Image (cartoon, rainbow, N blue to C red; front, side):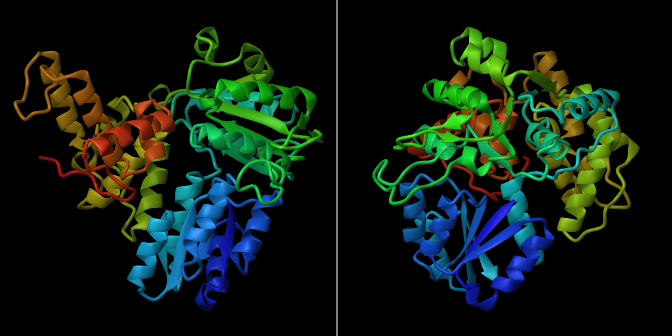
Length: 454
């Protein structure tokens, strides 16, 4: 995690920096917006910006947008200046953090951006075999395609491979091909020269040059626009890139890792992905199994998430009861590890007594695991419960809308997690949510609580 702090933050910059460093972040500081933009252009771009709310937040965010720099901005301020916080959010800041800095709050923000812990917890023989293969291929220079269902830890595996490689002292740079708009992606990958487009007031280095000597992860590469795939293929084959607006190629030394939750052979056959690019990337394939296919990992991961969220919420880390464990092992886990993490977070908050019981395990968008089994049984028998949740007589569009909204609530407004659970791209999810918003529906935002269970 690379953090850029802009401004003095009311004298709290030292404390904020120390907290971030203790949580594993690399921290840079800029006195003003101009200095921050120079850092972003230099090939040392941040994953997250924390900016003094007293700066011209709209100027900062518009400058980032003009120069096609996709990085979240968090506004920070001393005291309780509600109006300043509102202005910052309206300008495009993702969150507002009050100062003096709270260690757990800063940690939560960093984790929300990183959405990862670099340790791979496993106990199932299938994952033991996957790790063995990863250890074997990591020291090579071969491109590796990491595949598997959404939520199985593909980016985590990418970092694991980098840390086991000969390039571990170089930079690991990740770019989410699903999260960045198409018109920004070329500049993100290859950088641009001054004057390349309106708003390009200075040269900016892209992810390839940032990762020079290290590893570049192309996350969810199946979402990349086909027009850009040919430029990516050339960059990989020739080991050189052309900045947008540039007049000569730039040599790069980068190892490529790529991930996808799709069937790439099908994507190739349908013409959505270039076959030559696929073969270039898929020198080795590391395939992560779905959580339901690695049952011995479920108790290990559940215990980890219980301890994690018990500490985050300052409550005791209760053991999980046998009946609750049995319910976890029976569940299908369509959202895989991400869904399990959400379930354990809720269980920590709902548990009572001296253990986490079955009543604290909420699955499938809010029902208890017992309710889920009953619902499945009645559905199998063709019986409806009469509470409006039956699907017979409803249009596909209505069912899809409710599924998307409920999943987003289930993920507390986190669009990336929701898209992964739904098995759709973040771009598709955003388009759906824009449509629903235009229809006047209330769209869950980050941090929104789930709807109460009837």
